Length: 330
Image 1 (tube, rainbow, N blue to C red):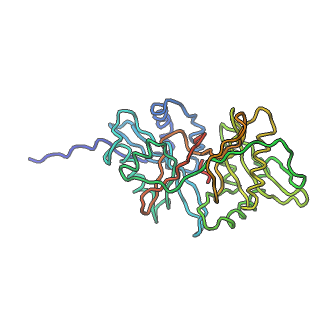
Image 2 (cartoon, rainbow, N blue to C red):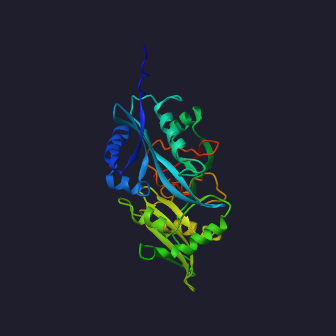
Image 3 (tube, helix red, strand yellow):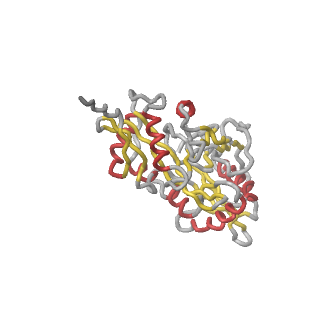
């Protein structure tokens, strides 16, 4: 008499566009909020395979998402992936090496991440609970930290030698030489690509949010000096991105502070600082307005996890704080 092996509790499947509505229903059940289909498809526009679905009895009970991101590295351009929208239905076992979360994470790493695979490495921004769980079972570990930078707004105008203008989809090509300069100045780092195509997809084409894209140029020659992205919130202005040479960072800081101070209803910017020295979070003198740097701009409010191959299996950039968890800058 032969015994039939018990069927596994869960099965793992590829998630593609045809599963989008099903995954949005799962998202609403797990997080108690809905995401518009247009925003979901904007997030995964570069990912024909959205990630992996965990099923039990044919029903979706978990998901591990992956949003591709090209990186400039010392060895050239490499493909990485930002993990996000990590979710498991309440009631499913998530603890331990055989839990639902471990099953999803291990399957994603084995299938997609590592030398010769789809992605060289993976990263993300797990919340504290998800990070403790992943660390405990050996799925990922911290790879660094992000600091929140805070400034007071400025009410003074830009120096006469600097001209500030708004970037749109029609003149966004002006950032191409700035991205080339940024690559040269941070050649020893892994820097997410910030070219015209990236800013068009990330900021100009966002289906819901509106951003202020500012270009700073020389008034005399018209030469672009740097560019930055800001987003206004009810209580602050978030500084989301920067492109330009290292020498232009102080110019961008001042521009962000001027933007925050240009209206009595605005607060100050927050966003991730570009590669290089950082500082501890510094509260602004004014409680009503502050310029702040720590917004994580493409993942969703999920238990996004961070991992990497080869060993250690996962590497994590854990923001010290993220006022709005939505993009890796950074």
